Each structure stands twice: as structure tokens, then as C-alpha cells.
Length: 144
Image (cartoon, rainbow, N blue to C red; front, side, top):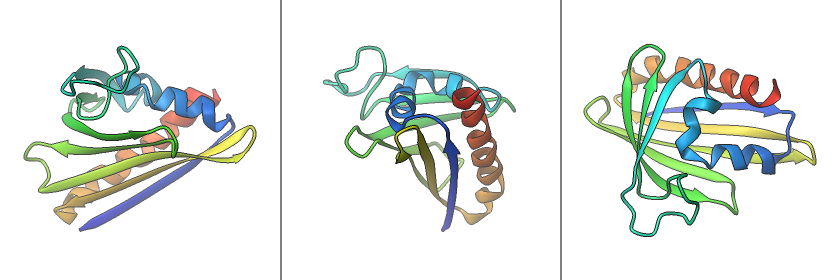
């Protein structure tokens, strides 16, 4: 199994970054240039209590700038740990689980940490550059 890791430092308070990241319906705005569209299909009966944002159990379909379309299931949105976990559905991967987390490093800075575990290993050649580009896009979106 390939295990990928990316992190980036953001010059924003962790609470501000988390507020933006946890709105899973606007992922394409945070990762502009890498993603071009995002659509949420409500699956959970209770959602996460945030109207319109999507929640645990919901399906998210993202479109990449290269035209690739990926469907994801949101596994967890953890406000206490400021972490989102998701899995990629479909036949592109035998297995793909990922998480994104915001970790405070000071009152006005934080780290964005992204893990991705996947099979087959060869798909890492596609995913790793997208994660690097995603971190750069997030910096542009939030740090300006």
C-alpha cells in the first residue's frame, strides 16, 4: 500500500482554516486550480447540523482541472480534532482512504496535514502530484 503525506504551513488561525475546510461543499473553491467543481449528495439522515455544507456519510463528487471526476464518501468530520476523513469510491482504486487535518502552531498560523493511503501502489504516481498541487492551491486561497 502506498502511504502519501503532504503538509503546508498557513499564515491563518487554525479556526479560520478549519471553518473553510469543514464546508465540504466548497472544496473546489479552496483548491481552485486543482479542482473545478464539487457536488454534494446528502446520504446521512442527520447530516452534521450545518445546513448546506454536507456531513458524515454524504457523497462528494469533485472534478479536477484535468477532467478527472472522483466520487468520495465523507467518513468523518471531527470538529474537536479539526479533521476530515474520506474514502474514494469507484474502480480507480482497490482502496483509498484519506484525511485532512488543521493543526494550530500559534495563534495566527497552522499546518494543513494531508494523508492518503491507497492501492494499487502505482496510483501514487497520480495522487502525489495532485496532493502537492492541492497544498499549493490551498495556500493561494487562504494566504492570498
